[in-house]
Image: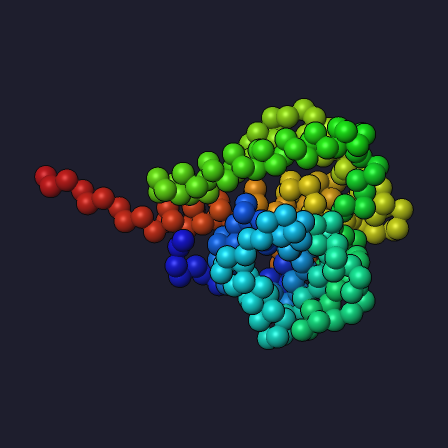
Length: 267
């Protein structure tokens, strides 16, 4: 991991689908991102802790504890932290409306950007019933995804052993799947129609592990991605401009900038 990463300042940061407690969680990359950012507002848009994985087999390395400590530390030192639980950490939904350790827990909320645009902030799993075909198709899809993530994790383990940076094999394969692309389009249509019906300018969500910035049904669709496959975040700049950050790509770029040029051959 690159040291001395330049500090970045934002008005708001949105992250989701971290899946702490799951073997595929890239807590190392998330830690480097959190330590390199300062923000007024931090939205945790669901599936931060993977309670389902923890129930199956307990996995909780030190890096996962460090992520929790870093998030709580930001809340303690002036960052407004809003936690919107998702389907993998829905056990925390019973605490919605309460505040723990300076962290607000909300079922969903609205965010107004510096330039006045209003966004629905929600994890997004509540729209599954509108886009999933049938229970058995959903089950097969879930099984295929788990196998894909095992391959993805193994692939990046060996890339790291060979000295290469992170690369999302899972995202690469999903982009080439017609079924996956059709599902994403149905999902995008459903969530933006909901935001439009509520008179909002757009929606910020996660859930489907597909970072995206688009316009649909007259609304802005922003998906902040995840920290298992893509390692991305959505950020708001001081002027209200919203931008998706690909953290592994930014780290690779920074590494390339720091490579010492080879000395020229003597004449």
